[in-house]
Structure formats: structure tokens, C-alpha cells
Image (cartoon, rainbow, N blue to C red; front, side, top):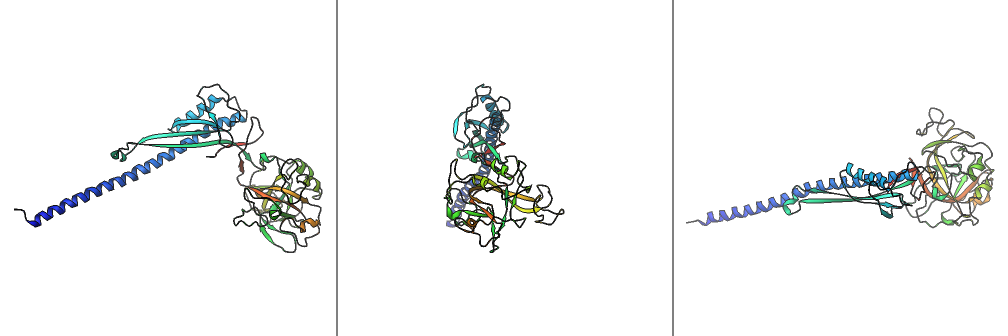
Length: 403
């Protein structure tokens, strides 16, 4: 005869076994998720790295094609992407040519093909995948997982001093990173900082898509009496007028120390205004409109030239030292500046009047100014512009991942 107590004990033990069993299933499932999920994440990362490498490998061949180095073909690109996929242990699902913006032009052919690389091809989009076994998920019918990744790389022009698409060059004048306005206000403004509050302030960088007009026009005073206020520079391609009419487009690193120019700095108002349109306060585009130029921004001066990587003037001289010609300015970034007006003859009343800000208040007699819009900023170690490049174009190129 079974007592009520012993029967209850057996029921309790049976319930405990069921609960333990269910708990074990939940625990194994969670452990499986952790193990298989972590492993899957690692394989996804490996697959993405593989796609990046494959896209870059094919694009390097296109870079050689654009630089007219050797005679690469469609087959050369195909072999490069195949080898990169094998090296990274991923399966290459597809490889496609793209233009400079990543738009697909057509498939890459087979390794050994003698077909030409298509016109307009400037990059490669690669899709790779990996299929791998699971550790625990197989218990639930998921014996394998698959990781898939895309990547697009393009050949880009390396911009040291001027975006090629703007057709511009360097303006041989530099302004300080923290601007001391040379008038009776003695105001200071940071130069080239991004507008973060939606209210433009003098010398702020305008956000992309901003409507250019008199309300966000910057007045850049040309202060003649302080080595840290402004400097006319010598990039080695003639006098100041020549610098402006035919801008130097050599390679200038960021950062660098650049030397001031000798000669009359008031010589060039006509040359500067040739870069501006005819309507003041209006951002005119087109061949006869306002031109974009690159202007370097400095954070120190020195009477001798330190190494480009050294931001200080010591022990050569005190910080912000040196006066007049042959002084050196430490360039830390560049801005793209759309010129609206140039007034450099001194005592220019337009610098004290609209349009633009900050309007100068009782400046010294030798003070002129530039008026325009600060559109872009190029920081160390240099900037990249992605635009169309034709074979043989005289530009420095790099391979850049864009997706």
C-alpha cells in the first residue's frame, strides 16, 4: 500500500525532473546562441574583410590602367580579384566594374580575358560569402550558417591643395586659426569650424547644401601689422600676380611650414577680382562666376623653417616670431573659399560695409579684405576627392573604400 506522503514525494520529484530538463534545454539553447552567434559574427567580419580586399585588389589594377602603367586588361582585373578571394579564404560571388560614385557598369570578366577595361571604370564592387558549420545550432536543424558581404572601392584623386573638379588653385595668402580682427573691436573668431547650431557666425564653415548669400558671407581682413594675422605666401611659381593668375598646383603636405612672399602685396586687386563674379553678395557659378580657391590656415609663425611635423618654433625663435618677408607660417589645414570680392589696396570702405561679416570698425589705413564663402575644410594628412579620372590624367591617386 502506497502512502499519500510517498506518492506526493514521487510527484514532486517528477515535477522537478521536468523543470530541470526544460531548464537544461533553455541553457543549452542560450549557450548555443552565444557560441554560434559569436563564431558567426567573427566569420561575418572575416567575410567583410575579404570583400574589402577583393574590391581593392581589382581597383588597384584599374589605378594602374588610369595611370597608364603597363597594359592591364579585364582579365588582369579578374585575376586580381580571384587571387584576393583565395588569399582571404572567401567565395567570390560577383565582381563588377563601377564608376567613380560606385554605380555598377558591368561584370568583371574571367581571369585570362584579353578584353579592355571598360571606359569610365574607376572601381570594383565585390560580393563574397562563406558557408560554415555550426556547433550547437545543428541540434535545432541549423547545421550551417552563411555570411555575405559587399564592398566597393574606387580610384580617387588625392587632393593636397586643390580639388581638381573645382578647376582651382591655391590663393597665396594665409589666415590664423584663431582670427584677431584688426579693427577697434579686437575681436577673436575661430576659423573653419563647422556650424553646429544652425546660426552662421563669422568664419564658420558652411554646411553642405547651404544657400550662399549676403547673410553668410565672410569678410577676411588683410591685417598688415601682425605676423600672426595674415601672410602673403611664396609657393615658388613667380610673383604674387603670377601665383594668383596661374595658381601653383604642386604637392604641399598638411601640415607644413610655408614662407612669406617678397614684394608689394597691394599689387593684385585686379588679379584677385578676376576670380570673382560681377554681382556682390551673390554666389555666381559658371565660367564667369565666383571661383573656389584653396586658402591655408596657420597656427604659428617662425623666422626660420622648422620641420613640417614640428608645430613649434623653438629653439629657433619665440612662438609667433618674425616680421615681414621670409617669415614662415605653420599650415595646419586648408579651406575652400568662394571669392565674391577682393579689396586689397588699403582703406577699402567696402570692408566696413555690407555685405558680409564681421564688418570692420575703424580699421587701420592699410587694411584690406576678401569677401566670400567658406565651403570646405581639408585636414591632415590630406583630403580625398572622388571624381572622374581619365587615363593619363596628371593627378595623384589612391584607392578608397566608399561602401
